[in-house]
Image 1 (cartoon, one colour):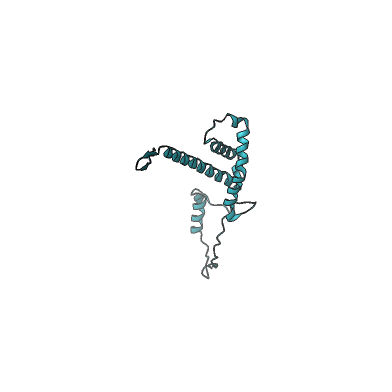
Image 2 (tube, helix red, strand yellow; image 1 turned 120 degrees about the vertical axis):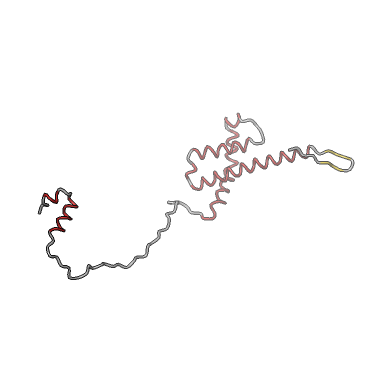
Length: 163
């Protein structure tokens, strides 16, 4: 069936609606509309996907084992750096070894080794150890400077510290 011109001018949706209103055929509803009811379903909450896709899961042992791994590797890498051509050109000071190791850790991170979970832990622990060693060296230098400034007096020793 086609829509008469009178209603077609109104547009498709509005035209058909007006046409149906005007040309009602005696439709009689004998019952109320049926409403479908469904039981409410419990919404399921999903666990977040773990970041670890595969590999070894050490749980609480990961931190200590990565620290042990750094301790195992540190002397070997330090000796390798000191024996290399670049190590020979480095100025000798109390911080040379720590600075060289921090540089090696930084470079290893930039080379993409920090994408491996446990290597990333070794690099992180290594940086913490090297900064701690630098702090310890600074503390030792402070103490040496303080003890060298000790002055003997007749009543005892006078300690003078310079900051």
